Length: 142
Image (cartoon, rainbow, N blue to C red; front, side):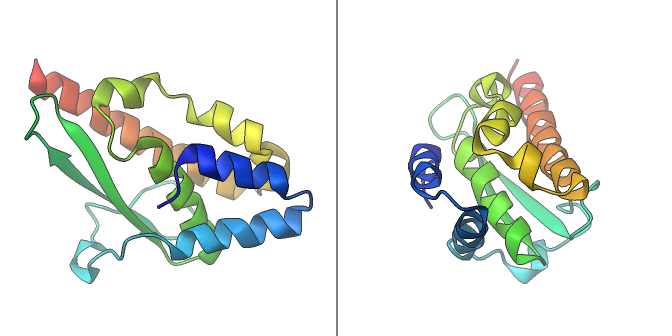
């Protein structure tokens, strides 16, 4: 999976939004496959028009919990947006997640002006879900 810095660099190289949309779709193809059993109600993200699932995996092997995610969607462009969200948050500590402003990154990429309101709401729903997971992980650790 690409890092957020690689995604940022690639976005800067693409001038046209058609090319950026194709790149977002390509990012979705790089997602680690999510087992079909994980396409469950528990993993479903509410607030998205397309179906979106986020599977949380907590790694406590190094002391502080690390939250890792697998994600999937039934829509190609949304799968790409899931990939961008995971590049921001997966593999981070709960505090790092809470300290990361995804909306600022999405605005930097121009999503505010180029995504439908429904897709923008879906992005916010994914971020809220991950931030809630981070808050719960912090509460469990204390």
